[in-house]
Length: 199
Image (cartoon, rainbow, N blue to C red; front, side, top):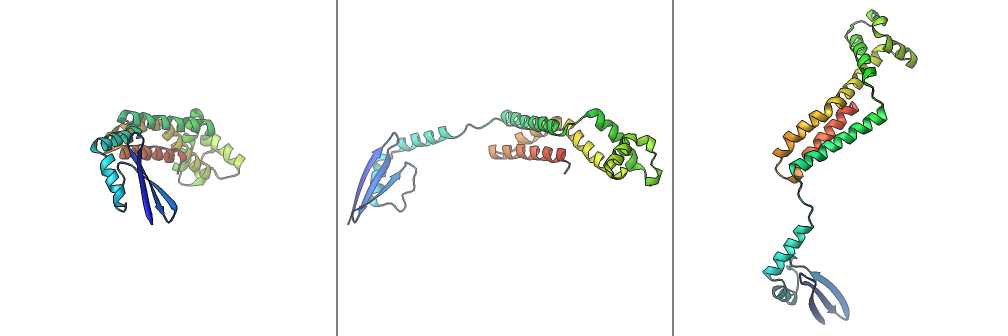
């Protein structure tokens, strides 16, 4: 034997129904926008009575009010710029970049890479890297290649904020919706991370 009790509760007339089947209570709740496909006729009748168009409209407005507010393009761009700034701060802290050091090493590394025969390298033109290669017990060419990679990372670190800001300002307004705008921002940030990682 089956018995159903239905009563509305709350501001939006959420319908609580208790179905008693063979002495066992089965409880459920129907909100104004819920699917009624497999609900008993008694529930559908109660929904028609209590879930009026006005109640449904108020419920939809309530759900909309719970959603996070859409960000403007300017706010998404500002988030991106802040993320880039934080990445740069972390890179300077953890890698100890020094412009004078990398500037001098870059000149020597470019000279070494441009020399076709290792035997023709003039140690006087690459004193810093020659000394470092000797200390690290590696070839000066290997060290020069590594330095060029590090210089590219450093240059990305220096140029990155301006380039990223320009990329944000170009890409985000062109995206069709909020999800696409945030995806565009995240892609630019990922590209910047990759550039400074040397990958």
